[in-house]
Amino acid sequence: AKRHTRTPDIAAITKVEMIRKSPKGKSEIQPSTSFEYGSHDELENDELNTTQEVIEMESLLARPPADAIDASAATEESFITKMIKQNPEFYQQGLKLAFCFCGLQTSYLTWGIMQELIMTTHFEPTEGAPDGRFPSPAFCVFSNRFLAVIVAIIAVRIKHGAVLANNTAPLHSFTPAAISNTISSWSNYAALRYVSFPVQTIFKSSKIIAVMMMGKFLKGTTYPYTQYVEAFLITCGVALFSLAMKSPKEETETQLTGLIFLLLYISFDSFTSQWQDKVYTQYGRANVDPYQMMLGINSSAIVFTTAGLIFSGDFPLVWEFLLVNPVVLKYNIITAITSASGQLCIFYTIREFGPVIFTLIMIIRQMLSICISAVYFHHDITIKAFFGMTMVFGVLFYQARRKYYAKLNRQVQPRN
Image 1 (cartoon, one colour):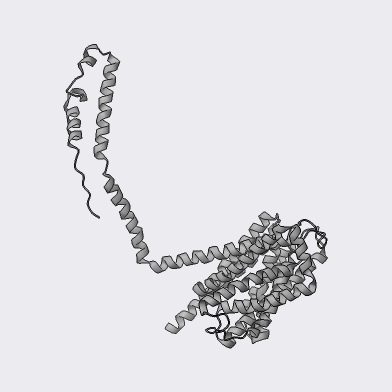
Image 2: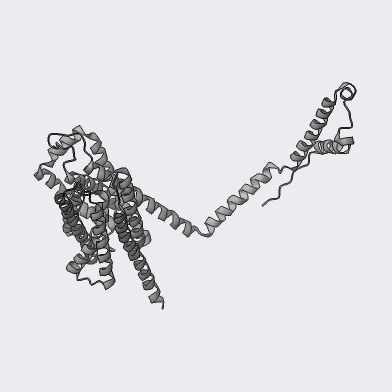
């Protein structure tokens, strides 16, 4: 750094030296009136003022110049800038990971709260919904798919320059996944009428069992015994949590209905993921990107949800309910926005950091969503329920760790 100097203040230095050389630290030019007619206190005050003046002068001379302070700050700033320049990739990846984490947490935590608000709140009753609860889970699915199609069209258009011209996989190849995705989403919303959100979230963790069964059925995939042990432990944790969270006031029939909807959800959702993998394998991952997959599935799904709303007669019920309770429309819009933004964050996170990091982020999201739901909606989590939840998330973290080290071993083997 450039060395900074300052021209000394000659007048100030001369004055300080004169004060120091004078008797008892006083100025040589004595104020005659003070000595001849002044009192003892006045003399002491004069000496005190003179001494204070010396201190102020010395502090002024000892103070570093302003340009030297600026140089020091510049030096510190240049050090930080230098560190970033030395490791640009590290800081870029850190910012990307922070963006993915915040994007996924914000999207899906908000999405979960809106879900529970829509399906569990007792709003103003209407003729079609005398109990005041939102009458149509299918409309929630419809609003999510409607916005997802728009987002997917924009994303595909930006990336490929056309919406359908560059699609290697025809739209009908996504139809089975669209049907299963529609049923699983509808079951997900409907289940909240009968079970609490924490029970639903924990139950979703047992999806690994359905995924393994669908993989075996659709593609003949074989799994090591460790995965069967993990699936068994997760099942035990889910069962313990669900039983411990059951309220004495709740009827067994109500719990059974909710369990059926949850089973439908994990079964069809597992089929969706396996069919997506089948499309990637059949047409090549280089020819079908996540945005085209998002467009293909949601385009077909919007057709099925619209038809379902028309034939079930839900449209008039929903219209009547939204006129009386306009806040529900706001909740549905927020749910649709966060669902679409969550899907985009999923694609980006997996592309940049892989499925293991994505899994860890989503496990954290599940834990946070349970805590937020318990506080906001006043769900009591007992010690047994907490133990069951700990068992489930412990196995999930172990799975993520196992997959991470398996990936490292695959990367090291070719080098050896």
